Length: 192
Picture: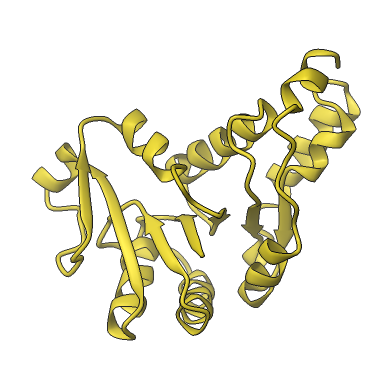
């Protein structure tokens, strides 16, 4: 299984988020999951990579050249793909993967997560999207997406495009028990 993980590059955040990241990384290692992520060396990104590398797991970073130029990329990655733009990076994240997982993060993480959900809504990306709601971090986003549905900006079927879990140990069972999204999603999105 190959999973793309979106997460923060900030090191100033509460340790509870680092603990959740470590728990997720260890679950992936145990199940031999290959991780694709943003290639960063700091914050949750760096911690995710450290845990996976230190325990013999598989991880690939995808980073735009400007981030490598200012030394934001993880120094110990053996699989690092350098791309030209952030847009190219986001597209590469979703190529040939089995799921997207979002840990807490800032605007970059939110951008990536919302883009994956948008692509799923349009039937471009059809794999599971799992959001780890550590410490209630994603409660406001969940409320906003539900508001989009309740006020008819999205169809109620769109609530099935993502799953929200509280504990990282719930991620792999959720992925395994979530059917791929219908590629015909664009038809009912158009008829809302």
